[in-house]
Image (cartoon, one colour):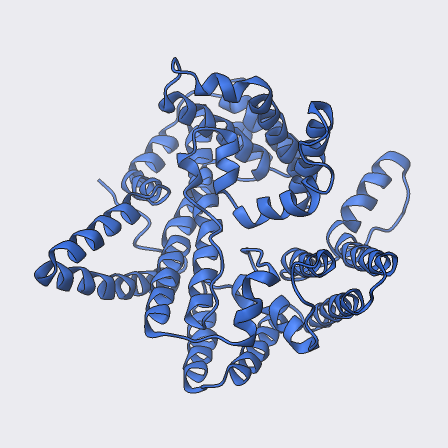
Length: 479
């Protein structure tokens, strides 16, 4: 069950919200959220629900032991137990098949490699629970005495698919007591509607274009034209931002509807002027997790340039691995490590000089990110090499009639998707709000009416897109 499905919206989210708003006490609302969250996880496989219950119990138990003991050595032992058990389970379920496949490639052993289904949200709730225990160890938060509240924190269905990674200290007070105001619900509905439209209309449409022009099929790629590959990867570049940010928008919106204030996770990264700036705006919760729990504990930038670069290497290798059990993801992480290192050594200062405009920095960043998404998309090494060759006209025709047809059929749609990747709409709304507050009267009524109508329109269009399924009338604006 995913957020952008009619089943989730009408058979899960709407009933949950109706019952939630009828309840008044925070404890009753928490129990309701826990029940619905466990049901949500059970859709991914009832057996994997047991894994979530186990990991939450382990973290609750170890955090409790760390909080109760006064001896630093015992605290450290409980922390080590937490890290070994939690990351051990993550390795088994997410990386064991990948590890054994590579071992077999080198040694011919083992004869049998198990195919393990990845439990829904395991990366997210593992990182959240680990961050909770570490924060208790550091004395930044008090340990939670009630297991079911730790389970609630780990299992909240809002952010389990694609984040944000929520720190316990962000929601600790709201788990205990929170108030849901009408403006919170209104904001949450609007934010959810924006995210749903991003996913159901824009991201899915970009995915259709990308899959048409640069499919993960070696035979088709070998016949594709260079312009087809450039356009297809541009569509994928739009898709992946719209997809990831859409889920974060929906998570933040659903959280706000029930009184939780999750932190922002995407801040229009494609308007960054350096690769470092891009990563300050892209999947912020993941970047901050690796900064606070890996990079800084390793020494950060406090131990000289060589150690700093080594620490960055570890962080970006892990960042790549976190995204998937495949070599292309590891290469993707190390690819960004190279550019971030260059920016740290000299390129960042060069871009800041007066001779280089922000436009050049922006163009450089988009090019680096563009080729990064090429690495990210293709798990098949042969397909990846074929695409790289095609992008530089190595054994591929420059142009094809199919490319022309797809480009013309999707011109306006891709332009709309591109605009959605930048904060133009957000800034127009802010300008309207400021003008309404300054002028009052008619302008205030128009702005209020727009805020009421926009979420409804977006929800209707999104539902129509989801109902259309095989044919989405909003994907193509033909000449």
